[in-house]
Length: 116
Ligand SMILES: [Zn+2]
Image (cartoon, rainbow, N blue to C red):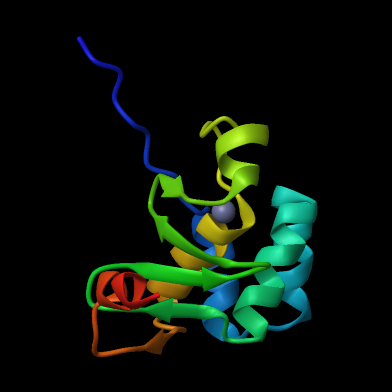
């Protein structure tokens, strides 16, 4: 039987804190829970770097990354974490999606990729 791909989840109390605002309380929780990656995720949220297209969520870090519940196109996720733990982009996207804190684009990201 094929191994199930695990979906990453953000702890409830982190989500509850995020609902109250992208502020120092959230920063502390993310830092405690995820270290440097949590710190980065906080910056992505704070600077509105999570974007929702019709087909994908994109998080703008050093590049633009396609992010899903259990997947990210960044090197940190693929190489360092080997897909076993969430990278900063996945953390940011999961929180952003839960609290509706993202910029919405009424187009397909894949269309944009084809034009590059
Ligand atoms: Zn990533």
